[in-house]
Image 1 (cartoon, rainbow, N blue to C red):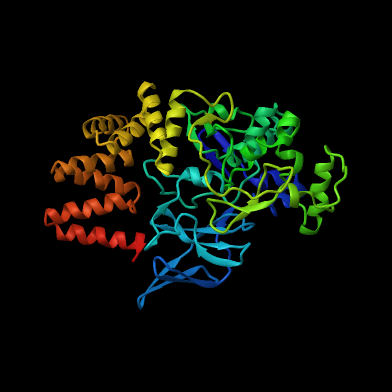
Image 2 (image 1 turned 60 degrees about the horizontal axis):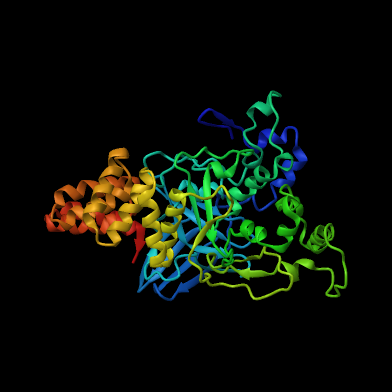
Length: 483
């Protein structure tokens, strides 16, 4: 597959295989290479009942899902998968080119189907969670997103898995003998580490810069985004917390730049299950003396224990904090509320203010809200700042200030869906339904399953006695959520 992305020609793994056949063959069997794609011809079949929603899911081996509730049945079809299958796989389905996450996941470690992470408390079968380019970035390659929408894509919507160019940079000039490819291990430590961190560093918040560079291997990641963690560096084990966990470890602190992801992992291959104990033991003994350890040869089982992640359903992943003694992994978020930049470059009022606002939406901690408002009010105005401030003002009941900022956002971007939905709600609250309806409709053009826009639009149309329009919206809504 060849893709022109702006002025960059992306070739795909097949072009690399012409010269690096053995490396590409080995890499194709790794979890990164198998992290997404069309569903295979056969998937595990099974069934389970989600108690809160009362829905029974029956999944056949071809990807057809039957939903049963109160003697009613609905059929859905899975189109794509996300996840290598090492811990589990979630699935996507397409509706008129819009991509949504199915509410079911195959948990391979537990050998069972269950609801996907984030769906545990649902009381309906929710099929309207959009997949955005930022989600696909770390699971797939080259998302073919259609501008002006939240989750609509060209066909095919992405290239399967993570391709060679994600870590080595665009290969068109190199393939023609006109340029060198990026060799991560030969980069300066911060730029070397950035290649792994682009997907394996989550922090408590990740904030894009006002004018992001568009990260490419060899760049500084801090030019593209800022990452924030709690000030005491504690955090719960998450699906993508490998990087910050390792950086907080005594091994990393003592070793400095000598220790990085490539010290223990070969990105082009993974050891066979029967070889993993010996493989990782050799990595540990490259720095540590055997000493008085009498617990056997398996260093990892004691010093890199596995635990259930807080954001991954039944997923169990490795703790990269490398504790000297295995301890119970904390599943709850820590008590501190203050955020700090993950690196010295990750600081400043705008990014930190946006980080506090993002974390506040999860925690509800008013200290984080107040800090977000203080920092954002002092920051230079751009759409991201205005949008967050407008939301915070709206939550505080400062509707006039909120409305003014939503209008400012729409002056810059007439199709900003968040501003459209929220401004329409404020306008409708003043009884101006005919002004609000077009805004909700424009938002639904970007994602037909925006629940708040749908419900408010139905209410407004009913108030105006527009029964045909209500029927049309209800049909679309039925697809987004099976009741």
